[in-house]
Length: 490
Image 1 (cartoon, rainbow, N blue to C red):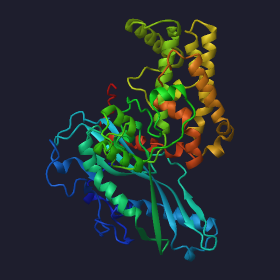
Image 2: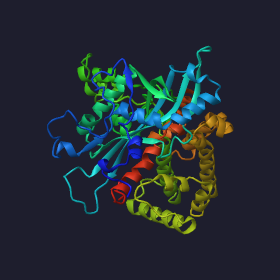
Image 3: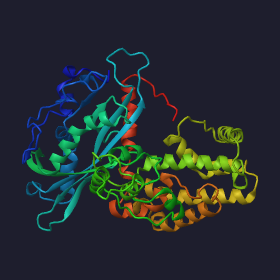
Image 4: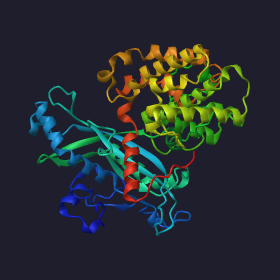
């Protein structure tokens, strides 16, 4: 029995759930109750009526954000004390100046209908919001510099990824989603202005929290930051580039978008101060057309980057099998036959079964030199085979840089050569594969080519901040509901 009802939990288990430990905030959190023993609460507490069609008390459950953070910190109590010892800090001297870096992840889970469950009518889709404590550092008194005393060794494991809020709601239902996440946003904003006093190792210590929303796929980022959907001509959540510009100049862009700017642009969109036409206005605000309600940290999600690029390579493989570079507008039947040939070849030679939706595991197997060699057997011209091999070779040189938890340690050479490799990759796309990238490019290819070095220079890593832990935990959620993932057709 994994899950028992809350009242049947043993004391040892209650200690592990939020709501057990005493703590206080200085100053007290705005609009948040000061009680510490709050366990699982109704995520819509305070909203009286039901939301649309589902009874309001059934659609969401959450922990209070500060209580959940306290619980997660107490889990790390030993690690924090060990870290203090290892850095030679005097335990009793370090009671203040701790700062905690939090990664936030949020993801829609698609279809979670039970095979035959009875219960209240709730949407058959779910959204999970979770956080991971990435690092804890402390200001050394004499030197006034930050010393990191704990770093999460497995930032993408479902074990380090703590659930905060579970909701039955379709991630595309903007109104309900914002209603449910608002309290979380409010608590998070309150915590930014305050310090947590919590006993660790027997002494009260004070912590400040820094939040980075990085574990979102592109769809969720656009939803939270008020941008148009992924098919928009403004293809990037990091810069203002349009799809056409990004396909002309694939490499030279810098990260400019941020939450504040999106809020300002939404105000311009709403008020239209210069009385412009819709097209001019949209060009001015670069595709911000809804009110951003949650701050995300401008980065690229490594897992979805991998999946997005694999989808694109899968299409390139089909095009090469059909020699599209010398054809105009092939028919649907032709395209279908190339896809069938590709699927059959991958299944026979690599035991790679076709999937309805590209997923992480398929992407990992498809993006290999082995897969390219298998595909090349179906490509008639040697010249095209060479181009394909080169494309994959460059991609595999680039990929570790945004996949690694710490690229400077794990793949320093590839990190140094990244800009060079991405330039070569872009040149190859705009010459050998011009038929596909003439005036267009996919969102994730643009990010992969244009933004990776700058993000790594700023944050030190992309892979560590990915949504992977949250995605893995989604599997557990399904497991606990005794239901199997049905791949819905994308």
